[in-house]
Image (cartoon, rainbow over the protein chains, first blue to last red):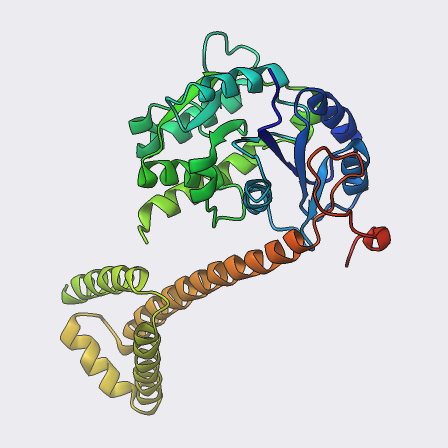
Length: 228
Length: 129
């Protein structure tokens, strides 16, 4: 199975330590990868380009949501791009999970497939993180109606329809809730797929900490309260 | 206590209106008008503290000073919301600008399978300040 119709969108912010390995592994399966360097201060950008990924650079740091939007706009302008994947740069996501999700999308029954950590065994997730993610789901009516269990999973696969309508206006970390809101507004057919998140020492130190979760919670509440 | 109802209902109504119609020139005009009233009220409060006390009595606040404090608090709340919304708007524009720059300067790897454009020259490798 060739994945030349698929683009991986990888937001990058100071990930020089692991980025090279993550990219070279992903490139073996997915020839088309675009890295969005969100104003990194290390040499992430050069590493991305040298490993064979396309590179788009924010002149200033904007945040993950903005980086995703930039990457999607770049990828959807490429000829032959039919499937799009948002993929973390810190090695948390598995290529095999992405393949599964794309194969599912190819059947044409769904538009957007979101990864979830909450299928089967969840013992590998730190308990405080579990609690926080659960709370976010409980507080979000959108997630409940779409029956999604994992609000802030960065692994998403979607088709051209979704990519064309995709418009994140929230620069920071509130973009996951915004994507859910978009899905409801545009009537995308959404499903989730079990994925494994590898929590390495590195990604735990870098990843969305609990404190950040509080920010996300706050932003989600604000966003849902002001319907504009 | 009439003042409690007045304050709560007034602030809630204004808040709803504000969030609904933020960013239109009409709202901006009303904000300015409100500000002018606020200034007039403040000046009067300085010149004639007695008059403010009378008004405070009408609405059921103890003293004119208390009425001023309430008005200040409400004013401050609005200023904060206004600033917050303004900032959000600015952030959105700033992001669009940065995105346009980023997409214009995109770089394709030399060994790209689908690169139909020439890779950019490598003279902008240093991180921009």
